[in-house]
Image (cartoon, rainbow, N blue to C red; front, side, top):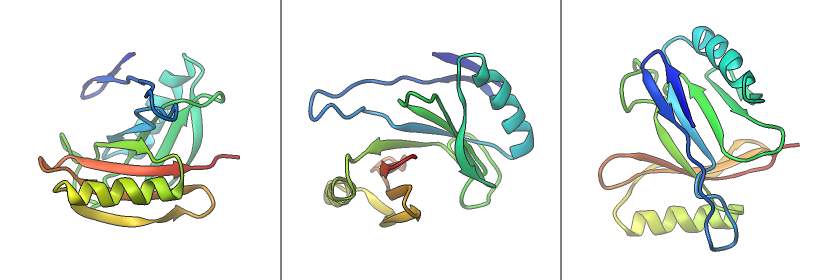
Length: 148
């Protein structure tokens, strides 16, 4: 699916894995410097395809559909530096469980990734995650999420 944004086009793709039937992607994060403007834009745009805000906090909002599947998140970059290409972008990969998150995090570090945040609860009883940067500096989140 392609969506036109103020900064260009965003491509959202969901692929299914063969092992354990986990999706390859859980959500994609798009950075913004103006949350009110971005929220208004994505509320309206994603409503066109049945998407809506599912949850969030002041600096991040998650969009998806009631049936589940990959989500799109908009956020003020965590480091509070201005949004720019690459700052605020991250790929999230589901671990399948907290133990799976821990295992992926440890393996990434073994393979040369650098730590960006050890495994732990980020939103209690909802979101457990760990963060790394791959050898090229791309930010990756390994996560387990329980909604509802």
